[in-house]
Image (tube, rainbow over all chains, first blue to last red):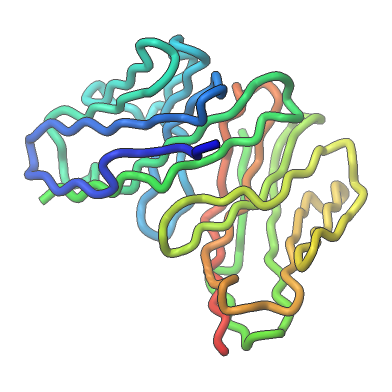
Length: 116
Length: 115
C-alpha cells in the first residue's frame, strides 16, 4: 500500500507565473485535503474534497488558487499569477471516511514552492 | 472557533532523556479528536496518536505516552528514553466532528535530541 504521493517535491518559479501541483492519495481513500505550511508554523487548511466534490474552501484560498479532483482520485492545486507570499510548503492528505473515528489523515511529503 | 497552542518552541535533550510536549486546545464542541503528528526533516507529517474527547484513558504505546485532561483542555505527549531519530517537529492537532475532518494544528515544537 503506497502512501500519499506529491509531485513535484520542489518548485521554483518567478513571480507572476502559474504553477500546478499534483497529489495522488492512498488508493481507497475518498477524502482529500490540501494544507499550506509556512516556515515555523503548523499546516493551515486550504480545501477539502470528498470524492470529486470540493466541499469546503478556506478563506486563505484566494481567487488565484483553484483545486480539482476530476475523477475522485488524484487532485491538482493550481496557483495563478504567483506572488512571493505564496512561498510555502503545500501538503496533501487523504483519509477514508467510513466513520469519524477512523478518519485519520495521512500526509504526503509536500511540494515546497519558492517564488522569486 | 478552534485553537491549538503549543507554547514550547524548541526542546533540546540528550539521548535517553524523557521529553514531554505540551498542547492546550480550545473548542466549544463536546465531541472532538486530538492528534499528534511528527514532521522529520524530510517534510512528511507522520501520524502518531489519536484521542477521542469521550475517552480520557491515558495510554502508553512503546516509547510514546499521552496525558489527556479535559478539565484543563490539555493533551500532552511524552517520548520516553529519547533517541536521535526522534529529532523532529511535533504537531498537536484538533478536529471537531462537524468540520469535514479538517485539522487545526498548533505551531509545533522542535525536538532536538543529541547523542
